[in-house]
Image (cartoon, rainbow, N blue to C red; front, top):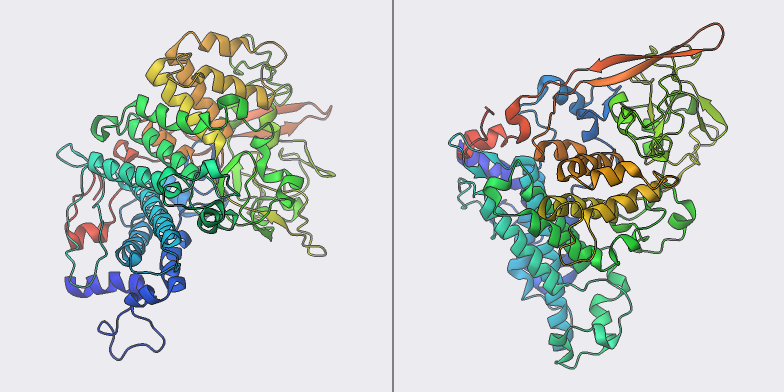
Length: 591
């Protein structure tokens, strides 16, 4: 039975590369994996399968399982998970199958790479081999990062475990019962792959100058035209050295965090150094893109993007396409949308006042009867509140509203919290069936803002609020730049930030809140809460807004959805079938 199961597991992997001795008679036009050695396009197609499986997503899926949002879709798997349906057999967070499938393609590619001819010129061939090896190792590091984020956890005997490290391709005769490596061993391999990729890949794909040719190639007599044949602008959009530096920063931040630090071997200082090295390339906070927090709706910038080009805020993105899918999912009903992702009152309350003070601070000037006045401008940028203007329309989410935009209407498309999503959406899309206007979108895989926040968090823990390490900028400097960009504390010198700068604990709280605001609806908060060992069970809140005959509005807090997580769910499960069939040690608490 186990051998049959192994075959079923492997079939998806070999669908594009099956061997004649696996399926008899052979499927017509199904090429042997060895054929890649005589066909570089086929070889790159094998590597391309790993790119296809990259787990980046613009749609805010995991956010509806946190205190930041809920979904009005009864069939949403993350909603079900957050309310008690999360098991090792029903796990929307799982990266196990897709990431290991990708690693299989990568290892197959690496095993044949040296025998693939990409160019007849020996020097150019060497550079192509180095480049594609760098891409493959970098991709393997990314998939290991996502595996550890989803499945790293503590065994029943208290050991922090990762996943099996797979450095060779697998076949029917492979032993699929190899034990899980420790988390530290997985991080060591991940960082080795990162560092090797950084060494092999060009920092950026562009027109280079002679002094940008690595010495190992310059000594071979490689010219600029030769170097750009391998590392020129036509490669833009693929993994680069700069992107891999960002991945290293993400991975070390995760591993240094409270949930993983005891068994990862990674310190806060190493995480800060990883992010700081990359940020130094753009002059630290001085290089923060002034319009970066609205990258998704910077219309002229998006329209002007050439193939593979990125704006200043974006380190890595997907290709762009014209669509209105996100808008169809999340516009309010009056704009022909389904209103699926509903921001919570919890998140709304996390936005400070424009003067920088939290709304519960006595110096804030917050008025509970006018709760959206004089707030952090990011609130109106990212969330549709009652009375928001969208184009020429005014959205009424209060229960006194007369259309399906109002809270809890029977249409099933209205908000459950009193709020609608604005972030990610382009309101120059018109969903009216008479027009059905599409606009250009792309997924921002990695943003500089995230890496700035990675640095701020790690630097504060390693060196305190104003410690600069070797970089010349501190956690304080980063947070000041981010808040100033958003228009927070610009009129009064941001005294709340100055208060926090005197305490590592208060700065930690502020950094975490800034991270929550800047990265909301980017599928990050769920994993942040878990790596911080923070509270997952805070109930999702909303607001019911009523209007008196004289027009006065009353704002009444409501509880929308309880969260049902157990303490062991800081770590995700190993898939049940893999525990059953291959004997993997399950993470503590999971069945």
